[in-house]
Length: 377
Image 1 (cartoon, helix red, strand yellow):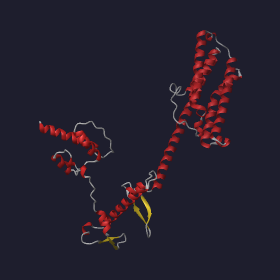
Image 2 (image 1 turned 180 degrees about the horizontal axis):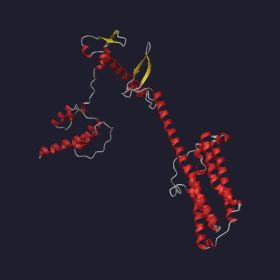
Image 3 (image 1 turned 60 degrees about the vertical axis):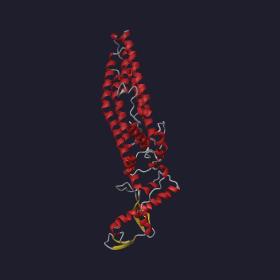
Image 4 (image 1 turned 120 degrees about the vertical axis):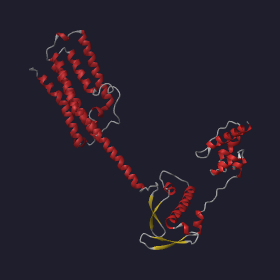
């Protein structure tokens, strides 16, 4: 007990992790090491040098303590020696593999500097032990004690294990707190970016259209743009000039229709081309409905290729009438090209865009052929 190294190691074992964690927490709250070095990585490396140096000095004092203590003959046999080498080797593997998996910043409390691990390490040795570095260090101390045949060294190893367990009671929860703070900041930043993008893109209505400020001929008025124009102005799309022209025309027609629906009673259209609408101030103003606007309301029947008419194919009158009720009087191109081939029993492979009638293309000739066979008995 008079050995000064013994008292040194008794003090150093709990002191080392205590000082490490105090310095790391001060860095987390004040960033004083980062300010001192000018960079969080340099700060972490500086703390790493201190931790490594203090650990090396502690190990040296532990070795000197074992050398100055009496030995036991009970530990002087081949089985104890073999077991000592085994646990010393296992402890060294746990420590070195932990350092390799975590890296320098992960091993030496880089989390406290804002240097975070991208993801939780689950590879060896963390899939074996939750705290492999502290466990490995304890095994290494125990192995040295057995090799030195020192009973006091065995007791010191148990003391080291107890001190490490106490240190983990403070270190592990705070590390979890650091990553909770990190996740909360990232979620807040993500929400702020989303809100900022929403403000930049403008407010959206219930129909998903964009409200923008559009300059008119005489003044500015706020218009709700149609989906066509909203899509055309989307920065993610790169339409051609022809597409822009078509969308402009469609949007102009939709805007005219919207204005008429909000201001004109349709029942009065045949009697007069002028109606009265009330403004927000209660005044009345007249709006002239131009002939070309009325023509826009008329639906232009689509041009139908006569060769695509269903009546020109081997489709029964009954089926034609059922299709006509559903307003199907002609075939889409995929239906026109494949009907006779499928009806005559040929194997066909066809490709067409979604919504162009592929299902009807193969089912209709099959049904018609089946009905014909049923009729013939």
